[in-house]
Amino acid sequence: MKKLILIALSCFILCNARMPGPHVREWDGTESFSKFIKKSEQPIVVKCHAKWCAPCHRFAPIVQEVAEGKAGELITFISLDIDKFSDIAIKYKVERIPTVLYFFHGKLIDRTGGITSSENFKNKLRKVFRFQPTDF
Image (cartoon, rainbow, N blue to C red):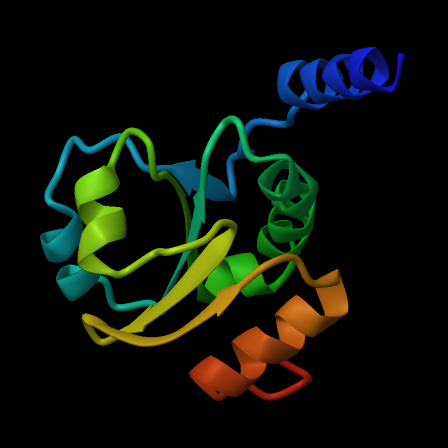
């Protein structure tokens, strides 16, 4: 019975997962990831996830919430499916998900793994990209 409940819960999470909103761009591979990172004038946050990852689905609304706020005007947010783009995940040594990669001036400057709260995520963004608390 417990297995059946866990399977049903997993199906519910996967089937009802929120897709990235307009402030979080789903990486589609239409351009070179490296070129995209290098040419950006804004800092870039890449949330690495997979469709089958329940913690990723719990973290997605937190990233979306932050991206919809003032931070979304200052930072480019990307959602990257590691199953579709395993070459990128391998290149940046994504070993667990969710993982967040922080890029600035074309370089990977930091990374975090796991789920965090919205406020902790904002604090991390401020620290990594040297924004002031009043910026967002």
